[in-house]
Image 1: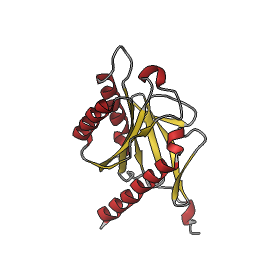
Image 2 (image 1 turned 45 degrees about the horizontal axis):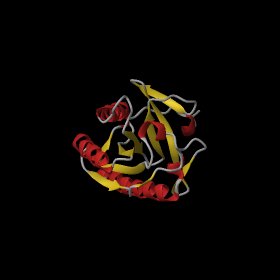
Image 3 (image 1 turned 135 degrees about the vertical axis):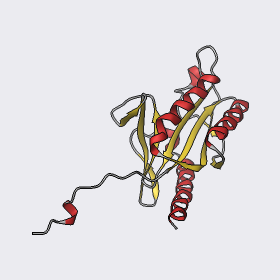
Image 4 (image 1 turned 180 degrees about the vertical axis):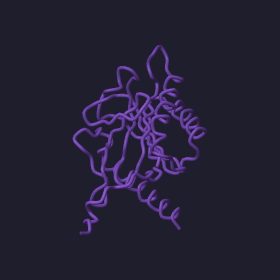
Length: 185
């Protein structure tokens, strides 16, 4: 009797490279520029950047970083391996420390990646919807791609739910898909 092919054991394989991005929050545009320069030195050229917009849907960072916070998303041209995520987050944390004063951050740098199926943030904070990777770093699926667009979950941060942000990440994903297809030719 022949086995049903649907019931055969799956084989482990390396995931496709992913599109690295980072979200930056600060109220100091000069500091934002410095951080972007350092990120480009570490991760290479940027091929997508969002407009700088008000980070005003929560006051979560206000006590630590002050008022009039701004947010920008940057995407890097070079694709990265998913396995490099923890090292990337640790690098971002070191940059935050570099710009800290009196044990308070002046800038928040949150890296993540975009795959064909989701947008994942890298974090040091554990919660029920996060998976431990290594070196104290967790992964959170923040958006899923379904029905030709990214869509949020109940835990998705408010700014990631904004239509402009969803459109931005959809455009990045479309370019990422083109990059993957061109690599396979």
